[in-house]
Length: 413
Image (cartoon, rainbow, N blue to C red; front, side, top):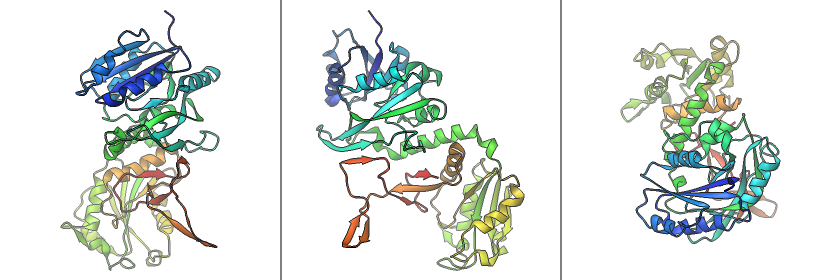
């Protein structure tokens, strides 16, 4: 028997109600050089019964695992794959009949490319299309490379996937972000502006677990950035304080849950080993009373000029004077820890530094997607800036800065 060109694998954990559609979408492909691995990861629904329908097809191999999780299932598929290329199809999603033909032909003709992915449709639980996601062309119109491809419809060279070590199993989530970070900068990627995949959205989607995935993203950023961080030393956390111009005088001295804001902010910074310096920059030395409670040698005081603390003056003059003796070569990273944003965590402060390091960027700040309608006054009335669209690209999203939100945020630079 000839070896297949492409290995498709379908993980299923309690996706029995959708699984037949997923498998049939592979059987209907317009190219023939494929094999299919269907992996039941300890389902308690009818997934095993659906798999039995396909026992006699020599192109299909069936596996059962004991609840090992999606990353481990992906590595099992990588180990068992006989194809030159490999692609995942989740048990609740559907392939267009031409996806293997189009993506496989692209990698065949572009041998220097390690991965290619298509646009896709969003479908509801009943299979109805409600949106079309179009991704801007990487390297052509999208040079930021910050948004990973959908891991469930990306065709990858098996040898490259093996070379980078497959999938991490210690994160508890597998949404393609780790793979994207391993590939970008080292291997060539591509995308095709054809919707060749149907991405089902429903209550049990892994992607609905936003906090879980955000934690995994932070782990990935942290691990990748630590290898490069020495090039960006010193890393300084700056806590700006001022006597006036806030909603009350000496806002740094106000209490929240029995702790003064400055005290809580210093604690957040000292919990991290990432920072070489933690500087309280203030126009009043009264902050030293709170600072005296900390023995961490990284904590120091910097005297701000009063004229630099008014609301219409940016923080930059203070930062320029503050960092000059700490970072004379100008190679370091400075993170601003605003005590007026008390719910920002240590992990968020670290992520800001990691984002700068990973992207060799000049600045970064947290944003979150705006989901409510926004309007702009025009010549004949109001125009909505972010109207709902059935067709959209990754450049259509509108964001707002998330200074005080410790929620799911994206760092831009």
